[in-house]
Length: 462
Image (cartoon, rainbow, N blue to C red; front, side):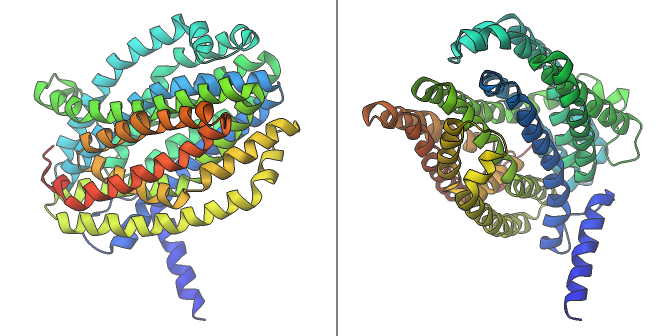
């Protein structure tokens, strides 16, 4: 009997979170607000990561060179994701602040202006990626066959950069407005299309088919988003007047967005160096194992990503409502939930690394490297969970420069030199890269916690 009310309450929260009803997150139960935002955010990213796992499953049937091509390409195209996530961080911060101020028209205006910035940024990235596709794979350490067979895949992926940019940016707008359910639905649509089309296109077109399926899936998601942005009934509804040139707002978006973009570029850039170091010291087998392990790691840390995005929205809206104490308490509560969930995931990875790897490969050398990578990367999961919440809380407040400085110090001044030191000086080779991963992430968490506790983020104006 006592369990029924608890189960019913849980079911009610899940149902409400998925309905997408407009709510005021600046008052009421904080724990309920966290889960109302986090559940659709977790589910939003879950199917995206399911696709990533399914994609690498089908690509792996084409051989280790195909897996290496996808891994190396995505290590570089993560630069596109960095710009998209950076701009979406700015959009989320400003939109959330306007929503907290009870100014939905100002929130819509901010969303429209962020789209203008994204269009200009994407044009440059797409051109460079398409033109230098072969050089990118070669620079990343791909062998002759990877460069020869993978250039078309890389060109298609960079050619579709616009839809990658838009799907993340527009979802950032929805999240800032507290409409996490709409962001979930759009990415679910894109991922469903990917999952359906990926095996079909790979069957007929080989590796390039995976890229074609991804671009088509993303395009479907963007079309769905655009309909609800322009014709929907949500808090955010864009009109022509919102796209009028607004130098003050554009400056604010860029001021918040460029450090956030740089922040994720720093993170992605460090991953590129790590991927190249694995390729140099471990070869194609180690690269394939590492990429499979990394994809599984990204999938299983989704609870922390969802919770951290929820924290960003709650911070932005509560600061807009001039309630910094509620913003702070919501972050600490979110961090506790994240630490518990990521601790559970850590034990899953450590205990079941080998069975997980055997799902994707039958090559013992690939499995061996993947097991080593997965266990080392997962060893600091609790710190990942707390760190992501703290970093996103600072971003949600509009203080994107502090996390950027933390990332630069921890990844470029510490992680990369440390990984090379372990790989070459101590002759640990690819294992040195795997060890450097959790050590650097733990340092990020400690610094992010320190700067958040100082409270300067409460004074940021956006």
